[in-house]
Amino acid sequence: MTYTREQLESLLALEDFHDIYAQADALRRETVGDVVHIRALLEFSNHCKRLCTYCGLNATDQKLSRFRMDPRDMIATAQEAARAGYRTIVLQSGEDPWYTPDRIGDIVKQIKKTGMAITLSCGEFPEDVYRYWRDCGADRYLLKHETSDPALYASLHPDSSLDARVACLRTLKKLGYETGGGFMIGLPGQTLSTIAGDLLLLQDIGCDMAGIGPFIPHPDTPLRDAPHGSTELTKRAVALARLLLPKANLPATTALGVLDGAQKENVFSCGANVIMRKVTPNNLKKLYQIYPASFSDVDIRTGRRETEAEIRSMQRTPV
Ligand code: SAM
Image (cartoon, rainbow, N blue to C red):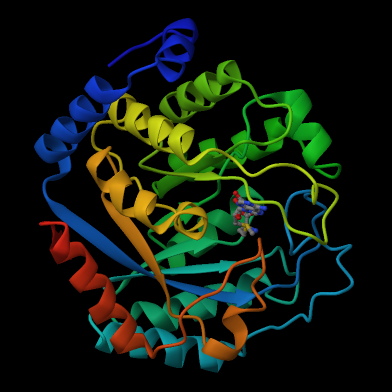
């Protein structure tokens, strides 16, 4: 479907959004069906050279205890996830130069032997690196554009630019990755027009996946006093993303669940069809502090079973 920026802005502002939620839900059923894909999420390093002002991993945060997983432990964790029934693993980290392109490539090759699809989410790299990882077996790449407003982007990322971020996304798409963009709702200075622009940018890039989640302030970042993003607006953006990108994989984001567990369930009736479950070792989960949150410390197999049961309780089929 095509919408103008003005149309999307008016839709986001509607008093009663009920009809759009119903349209998004019907389209989701028609295009991607009643299944919900469960992805294993392995957060393997919280070291980051970047300065993103909203993120608890940013390089200036002195309070955070930093960790790096040994590649052998990453591979063992991935094997355990595969045995627990996962078919896709997302390998996510801060931008940590210790993991050279060759190291990541080797990890991808080893994990690929499990038969799982591999999604990388490690930040911005040159085209030759993305190509190499693709050749090693990486299938998908997640790199949210965060905000489509160039001035807001520059103020939140003193060491980067929106143009560079979007260029990475276009490169990933060109290299044949299933490409995941996305953005945050409620960044200070963001307007409904910005969100309309965010949605159109996802469509323009041709994103195959889009993570749309609320901003949550982290106490050790410059944005500590900013209010968190609205869960209602997050759901509205997910529903409109479904209308703009009918076949896309749209997760119910972890951040939405951190603010309100019920809304995270509810977003599956607004267009979402994917959920991520952490398989990060329990002693490290709490150190991957993008924003303050607490996480369950059950083992990988139990976590998977819990998520499957949650999906079944919503009359949907876990995959
Ligand atoms: N380094 C990789 C990158 O740049 O894409 C992946 C890791 S980064 C921590 C993953 C995502 O966390 C970001 O794309 C951002 O949207 C999200 N994030 C970071 N801080 C957040 C916050 N305070 N509230 C909500 N989401 C946040």
